[in-house]
Image (tube, rainbow, N blue to C red):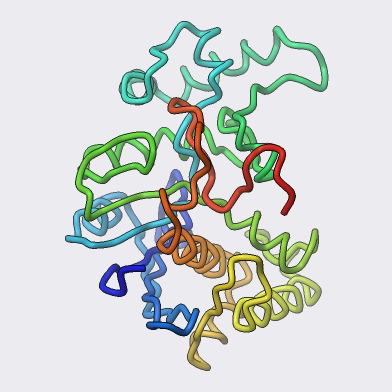
Length: 280
């Protein structure tokens, strides 16, 4: 791992505001220790701030909680370009109403229980289909986020070559969270659901990250204030950004950022998700 590389984890939203910003965690590996030091948390309340952050010079490696590609089955049925750059260029020209209408029509024509098309990575990662437009609206996250990565000249690992000193990976914090605390819920944007049980789950999750109780063999180094901040954020956005940061730290030490060979160059892959057929 290049210890000069800044590591980044990003909890993304398709509609950032002061109340619900994009959360940007930054850290650095500590030489020969397996430790990841959290250096800071930024909250980016609008896309201009996000774009400015992406433009910061490298070397940096970032793990972003948003899908980087659409399911091949969906793209082929809709007749959209089958290369990643062409597909993203087409997708960004659509507005959200058009995306919703086309995806809803696709789902309506399919049998119950198989409404959505999935990417190959969804099964191993346990992630929502990237065409989903509600709960969570990941299709709109892709629409808002990926074109900004392209416009910023960032390399999208395995999908799009640009600045080799600024590299983005697709991440999913829920994958690592489930490994550490199982199916327990640790967050909610709904104040009525910000329960003591979720608070305890966040404490347990932070404790597990600090102790490195994960197959990634990364231990998170926090100050007392940082630990309190992660636990106190009942929305889970701060913790999700840090989970992505841990995924970036693991990827920084792996050949090809830990992405399996032979991934679909249209769909992409979620970092740390095991290859199909592998056991965790």
